[in-house]
Every structure is written in structure tokens, then in C-alpha cells.
Length: 128
Length: 128
Image (tube, rainbow over all chains, first blue to last red; front, side):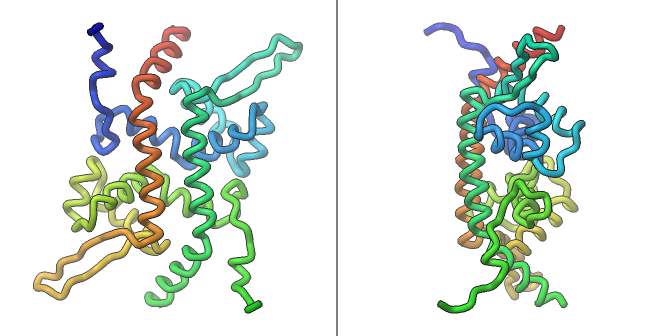
């Protein structure tokens, strides 16, 4: 057998606080990462269009979010040689896989909202 | 047709900043919510056992996380009438559905870690 990268031999475990997979999960599933990845499932976006789609995100926070996702290999940043340069963000193949799973999660949560509203009303009632 | 709850007639949209579904998604997919819900897929946990499982979480943060998930109807808190009382946390049926989807996301991210490590190394190399 060929020698493998020692990092690849370790089994990732998000429950272990020192495992880097936990940080990646936070980039992906955090407040803004999840919305940016889900939005990019529509196709490539320019920065300002993506900012309008992810309603409420600040310019700084979107830049940080995209930077982290690009570093993790989930988002591609393409600079086209026009004047002024046109910069577009899109999903890599791994980003697409993760985005697809996030969309399933979002659909599930959105679909359960009537139940969640009912649960909140019951909970708040018993503590009034 | 019977009259329905007006809240149920609204379509939830996590991309709209004012939609409550965004807050629920944050409770579910945030740094600690995701790990607590995934851990509870093992079965019921007492507070301290869950705290050990979700390595690195503070007592205060776990209490806040469970509180939010209980209010959203995803986690059940059962107090048994023993002395001292035994308090156990477990998933509700909706919590189970969401936990299952989160586990799929976690497995996907853990499985892609070799690719993520490689992407990070490439990214950091080009910026050295």
C-alpha cells in the first residue's frame, strides 16, 4: 500500500474539541455560512448580489464568511479580467455536496415551523 | 375547510432576516445546538453526561442551548420524582428528524476532512 498523509489516517470527530472538523462544521453550519452556502446553490453570485440574498449580513461578515469557505475548499472565487474586474463566487464540488445537505436541513426546519411556533407558545404559557 | 392558524399560512424563509425560522435554524445548526442534538441521537442524557459528550461546552452554554431547544420543541426535559430528582434530556419526534439530518451533515463534513485539509494547505501556500 502507498503511504498516506498522516492527517488522512486520523478519523475526524466533531465531538472532540481539538478536532479541526469542528471548526469546519462551524464555518459550514454557523449563522452566515449556512445561508451563504445555501444561496450559492442557485449558481454563481457577485459579492453584492450575494449580500442582498443573505438578508441582514454585513459586508465585513460576508467577506469573512466567504474567505473561510474559500480556504476550506467549499467556495471558489473567480476573478475575470474585465475592467473593472468581475469577481464571482460559486460552489466547488464539495461545497455543492454540503450545500445540498444544508438545503435539506433548511427545508426541514422551515417545514416544522408551525410545530415550533406551537411548542414555543406552550412553553411560554407554562412559564407565565 | 377549517380555519387555520395564520402563522401556519406564512411560508417560512430563512433568507428573510425577520423570519423566526432563521432563529430556529441558528438554535439547531449553531456551534453547540448541532452537537447537543447530534449527541442526543444516542438516547437520553443527564446534564453532566451530555456535558462530557459535547466536549468543551461550558455549563452555562449547555443550559442555554438545552433551554432554547426545549422551547422550540426539539428537546424534552424529564424530571423523575426520585430524591435527588433525576433530570434527563431527550429528543422529541421533531428533534429526532432534525438530529438525523444533522448527523448526515456531520458525517459528510467529517468524511471530507482530507479534502478540506488539502484545500487549506493549497490556500495557505499561495498566500505565503
